[in-house]
Image 1 (cartoon, rainbow, N blue to C red):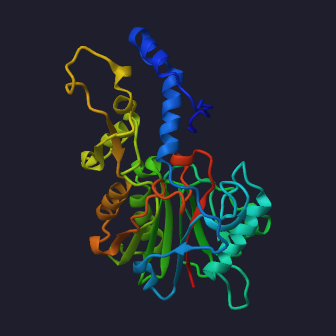
Image 2 (image 1 turned 30 degrees about the vertical axis):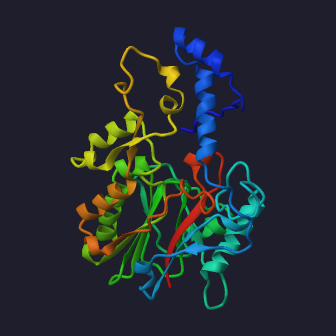
Image 3 (image 1 turned 180 degrees about the horizontal axis):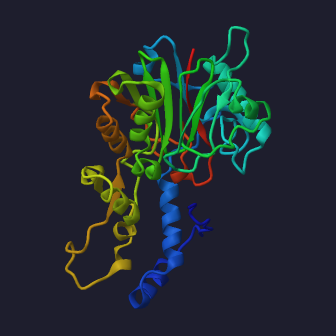
Length: 344
């Protein structure tokens, strides 16, 4: 669910706020204003306007000669939204569809996802629903190709794609959720999965390994796995609902959480708002609960039989680096990146 839009004021009467807090506690409008101010202060600098597209790749996957893969970043596009000259690759409400299509063309050219005749590979995407639904892509002349020709590539719902067909580019859209790419070096098969907290708690990556084994004959020991850019445990503050969901599914769930001191908390910055009868220094600390989705998906890969030496994390936090990545959690209104994989 998207967070409600807020229109905070830039000025606050601190004296008036403290008087009100003594009788009725902190006022909701004040809390909203302070949280909005905190978010502005924590946010990274706006991305520089650049004409060059930068695509991130994995060293582990780059060693496979028949494999094509990449993780897009935000600079170098034609989108006028989100700071200008942005490579937004998702059909978001704020951006013009024609600009998104031009961005995708630029991205595919930079990636060199083309046939020998110079024709771009079909790009297969899904209508992502934060699920554990996985589709197999059989060929470029199937339904996916037809949808691409009609510029309707996001009709099927799901969050995972697998294939052993060459000349097709599988992709997932990201803006904090983690893309996880799998490649079987022996069977020449690939998979890509969109793992937010909902997909992770439903074991989409673990299920993806199982589907590649069942449908494509892959041995988990032959799989290479790369966890791409996403929101790190340093920035991913969660609710009790999310923690309970993981506790109900994983015996190792406690290893995935960490209490982080929030130096930007209202309790820290405005202690007078939280007056109580306890002596100074004996109140509840300003802690926030954080979730490490990289570790969660790493554990699923291990449980599915992928050797630890075959797993790599890009170690890139989208919320820490909004100059390079789109981050829904940090920016609320933002674009989308693509993670893609294909077989030459």
